[in-house]
Image 1 (cartoon, rainbow, N blue to C red):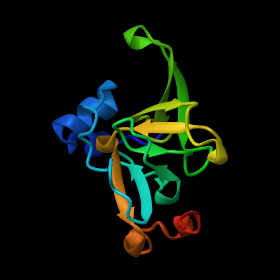
Image 2: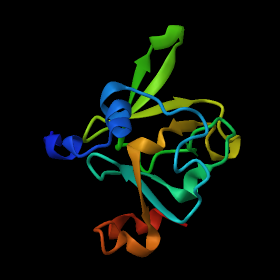
Image 3: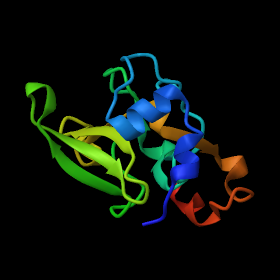
Image 4: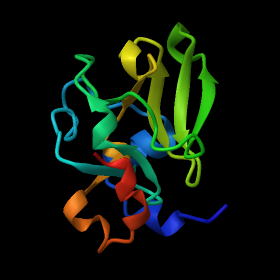
Length: 143
């Protein structure tokens, strides 16, 4: 696994707390909550593509929600029993960043999952900049 220490050192206090210390944004405060521009969302630490705007939906939960990850191999799912709950935590595969949690109350017609993700764990790449920034291979996932 690549060492992302230099990138981690550049994170804001909130980005570090969320991605490295399993933190959570306050509901309704994330910069990508009501963001619906066309493009992809990547891990703030590694730049690994994680989600597309095509799979983003308004769930009303207070955090950006996605019906699926970009591909099956970009996310690790881990049982989380903190806060007297049993949930499934999602982490980025390459940098092991804490992203949020996945629940089974998403849109049925899109598989039934709701990836509830902290904005501070993400960076958005608009479709107009994907090629320039090296994400050309992922354009096919954006509708």
